[in-house]
Structures are given as structure tokens and as C-alpha cells.
Length: 430
Image 1: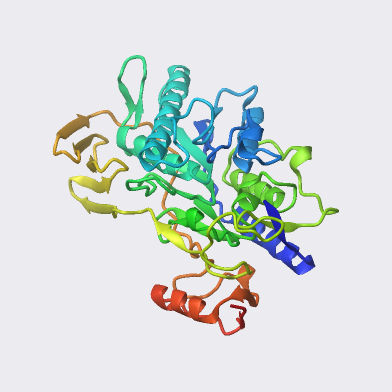
Image 2: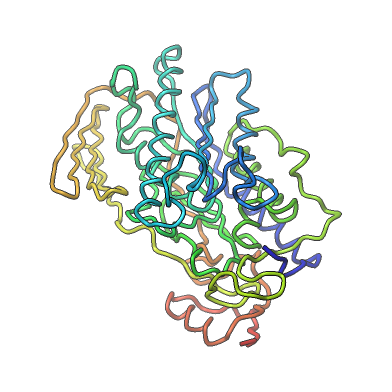
């Protein structure tokens, strides 16, 4: 890890504006006296109980957000949080940091563990609050984003099942993920459909503007309902936290404000992790070392505004239909199972699942779900590159592009149907 640029005052102000955009992208959800569970999924080799494993001096923003919510949960029975270390941490599968099948198996294991803990905590709460509302929230970093997506799918597909009795307490499709901050999701090596499930609302994906490593291409959630994707200055770990109290601290403060604006009870950022305005604010790179020696293959040279390549992770579209018989949703999960869920007007449901090998599973229920928090969908206006659907660039990104090959940028924009802003001037530096 080395420093590739020290930001001037305008660069620091731009990062502050990006943080404000993240915070203000939250939608207020009324949780009243309902139960809220925050699932915090960390990235590869990230474990708040073994910080040295990552090679960075600090734990991540995901670990900090978990600590803040865990602190806020003391003295209240309506709020619980679970922290889940990333692939490569103690207890994870061998080769889960690099071997595709093991990476996939590990992120699935983590999501299932989180779902089981959610069911345990929520079921326990409902014992003393019959008919109460239940919701989930998420935060993740790097490959933890894959576990977050699968966690949302498990919630939607299975609802809330009492781990002791096996009884479905809240039907499939009724539990919403009503808030989430997904820090720079990278799903290298993970296979399967990693779309967030139809129950996801009020999710903001924070995308690094300055990560260029070919093995760290961004997970593309452009245009998914319920998801807003916004840019943030810095490389992968500048966004996700771990280096210092510069960009990582601004990103953490933005995530904290987002959750607070969404109605979550969350403690303030720890004093030891607040933004330090007296220190230089820098952008790091792990592509080269302090002497310019290549450490990782990169897609492009460093420079603010150089487009970052992305990986397609939403591999199957969701389809929703309404009729007199109710609302029918078709969705394909991470394992290739095709799920058809019918929510009937009388509050009952019917679910039909077809696995990849052709096996079918049918389930139904007549119980009406408890009233859940409003989670009507919202769609973010800007994609992972900070552009809206008309090709306009996000206000926080208006700046000259440095370090970009003009032909490369033009080809990239043409392929995606984007137009270059008039205020943008390209410098061909190779």
C-alpha cells in the first residue's frame, strides 16, 4: 500500500460532498417499536478480532458500524446486530480467498449463518412481541457484498422460520431489507446470481473512483430497484476503511449518517475513527509499491475520473406481475433455483421452487404476516460511475479527467451509451 496522491482542499471538499450525497440518499423508514437486525459482512481477510490479518492498521468501516449499532443496542430488546468476518478469516474454508468454488462456498456459508442468527434473534423477540414487525438492515465491504446479496435472497425466499419449531412465523417475501450501505462490492471468484432480492429497499452502494486493479473490478448494481449507487474518492480500502482517518473516516461518517437518516439507532463514530482535518488526506494504491513496482495488474492508469471497469453480477432479471389472484414475483437465486412467489390478497402465499437439477418444492400458507415497515421501492438516479440514465455526470464528479487515455475513455463511454459532459476536458497522458 502506498500513497498515490495527496488531495488539495478542493479534493477534500469533493469527498465531503460525496459523503453528504451518501447520507442524504437514505430513505426514512418507520420502524416504530419493531425489531431490527443489522447484518455486517466484512471483506476478504478482514476480521475485527484479528486486524493484522488484513495487513492494514485499522479494522474496516463495516466493523466500526457493527460496533456502533451493537453499542446502541445495549438496554433495548428491539435492536440486535451480527458481525461476520470475511473469507480468509479464522474458521473460513481453505482457499476461500482465491479459489473460485471455495470463495463461492464461503460467502454462501456466511450468508446462511447470518440468516440463521437473524431467525434466532427475531423469533426470540416475537415470543414476547406477538404480531410485531421485523426488518433487517445490512452493511458490507468488498466480497462481503456477495454474502449481503445472498442474505437478502434467503430472507425473501424463506421468510422468518423459528429455528426451534420449524414454523414459519413470517411468510416468504414479507421481510424487507430496509436499509443498507454496501462499501465497494467486489465479487471476484463468486459465481451465481448476486442480485439483491425483491425485498431490498433503501440500499446505497458506495463505489470507489480510484481502484484500478483488474482483480478488483466493481460489482455492477446499475439500475437494480431499491438500490442507489454513488461514487466516492479513493481506492478500495480508502472507501471501505482500514488505512487512516482521512477518506476512510469520511466514508464511515457518511455510512453512519445514512443509517441514522434511515431511522436506525446507531452510536456516534468512535473518537479514534473520526475524520482528522489536521492530517493530509491521501488516496492510496495497492497496484504499485512506493517505488512504482507493479504489485497487481491494473486496467488503467491512476487519475480522477478515469472510468473503472466493472463485473456483471446480476445475471437473472426479476419479474413482478399483479392480477386478481395477487402479486406474483419470479426470481432466480444465487444457486440457480427459480422461485415463483404468489402473495394472495387474503394474506396467504404460495411458493414454487425449481432447482437447477429439476427438483421442485412447493410451499404455501394461510397466515397473514404481521404488518411490516413500509419498504416501497426507490431507484437511485446515478449508476456506479456517477452518471444518470441520460448520461449526466453526478455534481460531485465535475472535474477535469487526469491520467486517462482519451481513446480508452471514448470507447468506454460509447460502449455504455454515455456521453461526455461538456465541462469535461481530457488529458491524454498515455
